Length: 389
Ligand SMILES: [Zn+2]
Ligand SMILES: [Zn+2]
Image (cartoon, rainbow, N blue to C red):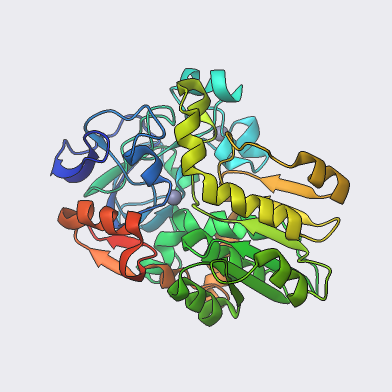
């Protein structure tokens, strides 16, 4: 089959690779319908997160059709149209049983690469380095899905393929960020970053009952999308003082919760410590660190900070401010399996529309060029979508 492979730092190529095969009886093989770029891919494409190997198939957000079914699979059948969360989960360990899906204890066969840094390993992810399990990714004609009964979700009638696609990662990540805010009637939620995850956080906060949502970004087309799709108020951080403007907009009190979705969807929690990339990482994360500091300052006293990024290397993290203001900090990698049923309902009721993220379509053969555009955020691109078959 054809697949997009990592062949070295900043070297992506579409090439011939072997078809996936069943490894255990709980597997299925999915013919990829749609698959999309993710900001977190950029972290290993440029070598910031190590443990990629030449020839690795990348991509971790996808939907498609089940074409081969293992003999122990009970809930999924050939021909089913399914969406699959990015984290691979067993459904039976302590973490899965406690709805902490991205922390699944059993699906990362390379746990020893994470333990020196994290203490305990995360779940495996499709197409996302050997430290995260070394699983083949979704930018391909076909993909193997382990634990199919747990990880394949049949897409209800009425949802388009594009709407379903983003329920793989962008939508559950943003929605979880909003869920962390414990939104009460009358709340105002501010979201830093209006890319894929930020848009989903804005729409998710609305769906969960926020009275006002405020989007902070520097790209006019992203701010427009936030206004159009989430009825957001918007702040361009290049032309406005973010903290002062938020104060004004909230009668001097500040937003009830602040969600950080800048430079987002990063699935690499602090692995860089182990590889002495401190200087490089600090450089790369300047924007994001600024956003988090702004959020900590801007949020009202006793409010919530919902962090969806990677902060392993942030310097001058203002813990004292968090303590003195009595803030609650919530953060995690997305627990997609927990949120899927709710997300289907929000989309069916028209309360969220993830398909608005699909600003650009490319063929799989053209996917290296798509990643170049995605990296540079050219032409208002939020997410590049590939249709491999
Ligand atoms: Zn992603
Ligand atoms: Zn598990």
